[in-house]
Length: 243
Image 1 (cartoon, rainbow, N blue to C red):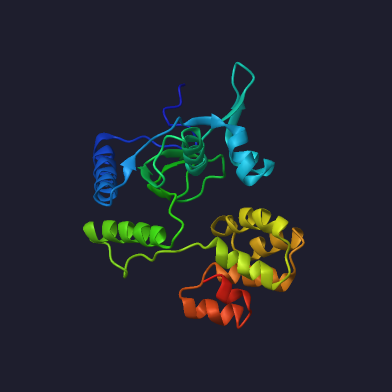
Image 2: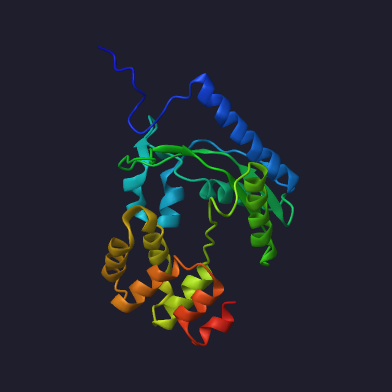
C-alpha cells in the first residue's frame, strides 16, 4: 500500500496551517521592509563545495547531498549564508557598497529527527553586508525586537542570543590557541545546542584544546551580560582589544 505520510523529517501544510505560515512570513517581510531590507532568494539546490569551503568536508554528513545526472556534487541548502556570499561576490562590482537583504528560505539538514527538530525548516534571515561598525548588529537586533513586539511577544517569553566571533577569538588567544584552529573551533561550538556542553567540550579536547579552555569556551556561549563576560575572561589584555 502507498505510504501517505510525507518523507521522514518533513511535513505537509494543510490550509489552516498554511494560513498561519503565511501570516508569519508576511509579518517577517513587513518588518524587514520597514527597516529598509530588500528580499532575495537563491536555488534550493547548491554545490556541496560551497558548504565544505565554509565548514570542512565533515559537514557532508549533515547534508541532503547527492550526485546529479551530470556527475556534479549537489545538495539541498542547509543554510542561506553561503548562497548570499556567492551572490554578492558574483556581482561585487555592480552592487552598492552596503547592502541590506532578507530572505525566508526553506533549508534542509540530514540529521536525526527529534521532537521539534525536523530535517527541513524555514528561517528568517536579515543580512547587512559592507557595514563594519557595530551599527549593523544594532539595526538587526532592533528589527528582531520590533518584530516580537508587533506580534505580542515580550522579554518574558523569549531571550535573544548574540554570537561574537571576536569574543571567541579573544578567549582562544587567552589560552594560546593558534589562529589556524579558529575555524575548526567555530564548527564545533556551532553544535552546542544539538549535542550539549559535555560532548562539545570533548570535541574541543579532541581538537587539541585544553580542558580548561574548552570549558571556558563553552561557558562563554551561555553568558547573559557584558558583566558575566568580564568575570569569565578577567583582566586579560586581549579584552580591551576586542570591545
